[in-house]
Image 1: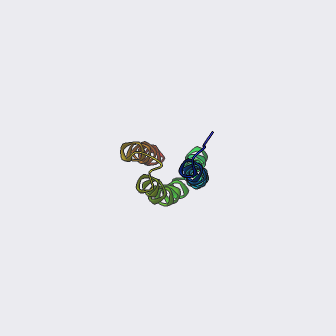
Image 2: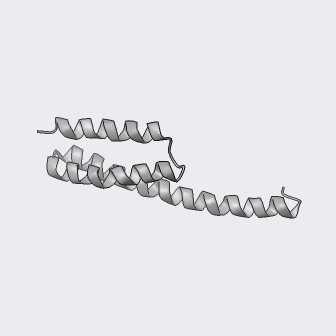
Length: 87
């Protein structure tokens, strides 16, 4: 348990950051789920639109420290190749 005032403050700060990061991660997952659903339905136009909306969200997650840059790039790349395959 935190004893010093500094440790107590850090605990409060970590709690707030965790909540913010959790919300951001959840928002990104929602965008990714929209792309997955569009791919599953086979609608290329909807999948393309969903991917275009999801890309900036993923990259914003990188700048905010939620994901590593390579992780986000890999996710975008794999989704883009799956959208491209749709007829």
